[in-house]
Every structure is written in structure tokens, then in C-alpha cells.
Length: 242
Ligand code: UDP
Picture 1 (cartoon, rainbow, N blue to C red):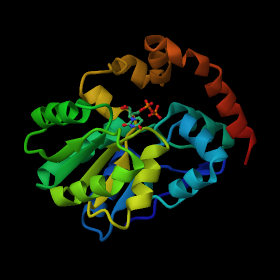
Picture 2: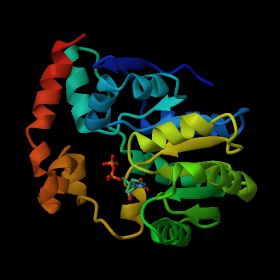
Picture 3: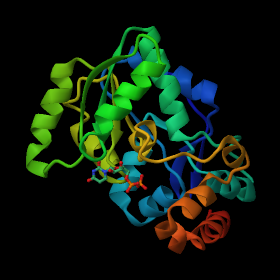
Picture 4: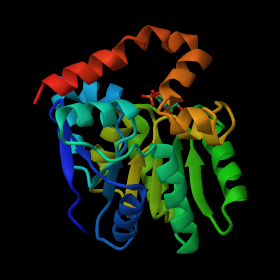
């Protein structure tokens, strides 16, 4: 696989990838041995990783670290080591699903509240011709059920595991079971199933294109408003710290 250029924000690895490069890397993963790990950090996850060495090391050992947040782009610019563009994990995943469909590789949706993964899978399958859904299940299982969850994913024959358990649960789940997982790739995708299922509406294109998706989410979900001061503080902290 091609070596991707990287930067570090608060010491946490982030790859400087365009969408085309990320998808090329994904294609390579489908034909590489073992289960490749894709993570999609935003500012909040990078802050979490800064305080949680185990998460930081999972991100460090991933095969692809996609810059999911505009905060990462601004922080990298201020540091003088710019990430070219934000690549939303959900946009990457959607394009990766198209690749799976075109190659006849099936996918498994794991995560979100009961019924949401199934609905998300049905909706994207209706939009992407030829997409094969190998299986889907919710993300509210007990630690004692994890072995069975992994067995179900493996039995499904899926090549790509879309894992939407929230962070850091999804990153730890994939990292903990990476050696047993028979999928060619697994990605942590946060709230993507909530969007694909129609439970949550994404910001209109204007907000996305102007780096304001985070603001739209706060306006729509006022419980997120308490995080409002966090983004500028993150950018300043990340720019100052080498
Ligand atoms: N989620 C899950 N299992 C859990 C906790 C969360 O499947 O134990 C799902 C949740 O239903 C949602 C997704 O993970 O669909 C992302 O959750 P949230 O928005 O809270 O996390 P974030 O992506 O902001 O870290």
C-alpha cells in the first residue's frame, strides 16, 4: 500500500489524504491479507485520544486515518503542516460502499440503536446498485456477547465492516478483534447509520462546503451547545502544541 503523508495534531496521527487517495488505499485493503483498520477522527476524538493513550495507540496503528473534522484542517494550517481538505467519514464510507458494490464484495453494518443499522443498510442498498448487505445488527451488545458478534460478522462473509458504535467504542472493538475478524477492512463511522437511516438529517451542502457542519449539528441538537467553545479552544491548543 502507498505510504500516506501524515501530520500529528495534539500528537495524534492524522493522514493528509484526498478522497481519491483514501479510496485508492481502501481498494488496496480489499486485496491485502488481514483486516485493515480505518479511523475517522474529528477534533473531539483527537482530544479524547490525547487523554487516552490506548485510543491514541489504536489510531497510530491504523491503516488509514481520515481527517473527518474541519477543526483538524484549521489546526493543521495554523501549525504550518496543512491537511489539504476535510474528508467526512460518512462521505468516504459511502464511496467505499460503491467500490464494494462494483467488486461484488459484501458489507456488514454493526452499530446504532436497534433497527437503525438494518434501515440504513436497506436505504444505501436501494441507492447503490449491486450493493450486497451480508448482515446488520445494533451496537448495544454486552461485552460478553462480543465473541458472538465477531462470529456473526465472520459467518456473513462480509469484506467490509462498517462499525458505528460511537468513539472510542468502535475503535476499541475493531482493534480488540482485528486478529479474528475475517473482513478485509473495518471502519469506525460514528453516527453514519443515523444519517443513512433518516433518523438524523445532515447539514445542507452549503454548510458542509463552508466547514460549518459542526455548527449545524449544534443548532439542530441543542444538547451539543455546551461543546460550542470547545472547537476554537481545540484549534488554539493544537496550533500551540507541537
Ligand atoms: N452507539 C452504539 N452503541 C453504543 C453507543 C453508541 O451503537 O454503545 C451508536 C449510537 O446509537 C450512534 C453512534 O453510536 O448511532 C454514534 O453515537 P454518538 O453520536 O453518541 O457518538 P459520536 O460519534 O459523537 O462519538
